[in-house]
Image (cartoon, rainbow, N blue to C red; front, side):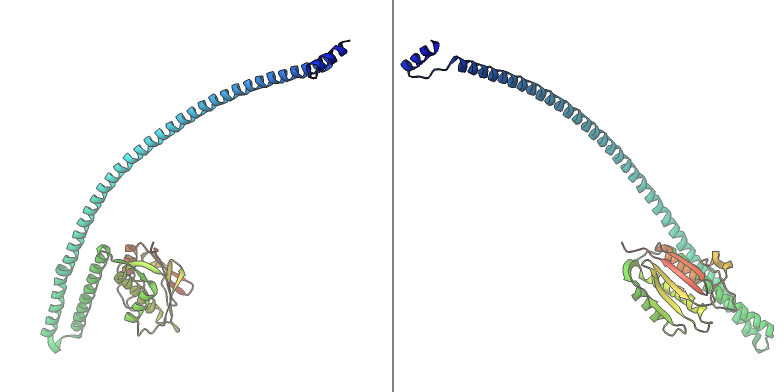
Length: 325
């Protein structure tokens, strides 16, 4: 009967009507949709709460990080300020120390100049007198002078001349320690070739040059250094049957001057660069023990290291050079 009434109602209204079963199904679906909507709203609320909590935590972390960074920056600024004050204090101290050293160096230079002048004049005056009076005495004695007297006078003049050479060497040695350096970059090969051409053009000992490199040094002083080292090598190599001198680069910063001469005894190893120290007797080789001391003095002024060693049957003079940075 209900179904018939529903059909009649649908016929008169012109609209389809759902059956009770369909209405129940629709109500069930509507209930499910409402439940889902409520669940979604609950989930959305939870997400909003979690997001708010996360934002609060992020803000707290950012605040803590900001405070930490500000603390570190403040500490670093304080540290930099302390270092700056310490540096300024050190700079003032170094400046004062530099001024003190300059004053001391100037005082030392004045003393050396005074000593050089004293040696050059006051010490030479007695030598000139001794030399002159020896000639006067020889002239007074004339041809009747005893042979012993002539020999003694000749010995006096010879030693006076030697003393003059020693005084010149001492003055030059002192000058090398205080003279200003004209540091320029030069070719090592060009300098050595110039030294050999000027001083060893007629050397009886062959000199072989195999060097390279640009270094900063005082040209005049380093030419003197090489002249002394090569002269020492040639002098002691000359007596052997096949003498030779080789100048080579053992490394990019190490120059060696090698000779196959007679060498020197280990007893002289500690004193070989001492001024006026001879490593051979006066009757064996000429010289006054000046050359090596001059060379070592010049090397020291350039912060180079000069060494002399006997290796097998060869004498090796090695120079550790500072590069031109």
